[in-house]
Length: 282
Image (cartoon, rainbow, N blue to C red):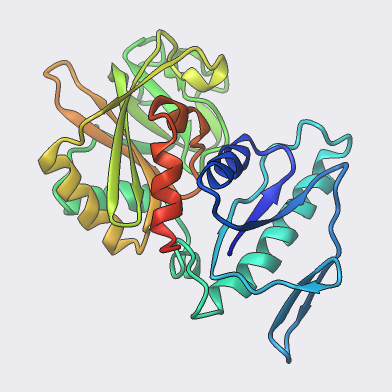
């Protein structure tokens, strides 16, 4: 039995639920939200997980930190709740050798975007010309050819020319050349890689969700180099993003350890969720 845990409104978990149901694979949903608060009890000494007064003994667990908080009236409290639910359930799951989970060891260290770029380069992947600054004094802020984004994420990618805090930023940001569409995203799911082209006219398609997703083959050399990087990071479930320069060379941008996948699953007619299920060695 697979334990599926996360937010009540997480469309990615909904897609996984639908695929598990389609394949007639038993699963248990531990979903939390404004309209849904299960009764959780973890007996540390007895090493028992109980939900709604019943012991749950999964053979695998797929858990997502809930980021779908738009239904919550108190976002700060909802974020605190999501973090504590995630830590509680994942902490139990990764401590059970008999329970298969993705990225079992990766949470012993942070996923750092600066480190990702340095390690990607060391493992043979091309990366964009990148600097990290909190001072724009020596940059041409009128240039349309450069973009910025926070080193820890949490904001959309923007044009350097649109930064109005010049010359001093509120925190360090990546400054990179503006690369070309389409963007490529490659998922690692257990031993498998799945690649997609993302076509959009937006600088950051996440602003409007104006994007066309097309399943494609994984470039051989790129896939091998990416696998080595993800092995180094001890990630067996992740998504890496790439964009091309004017010569068509794909440059590594970042790794996401909790990627959205519902829209990409639709582009494969359920094969991405199949890979998640199969990757959990059900």
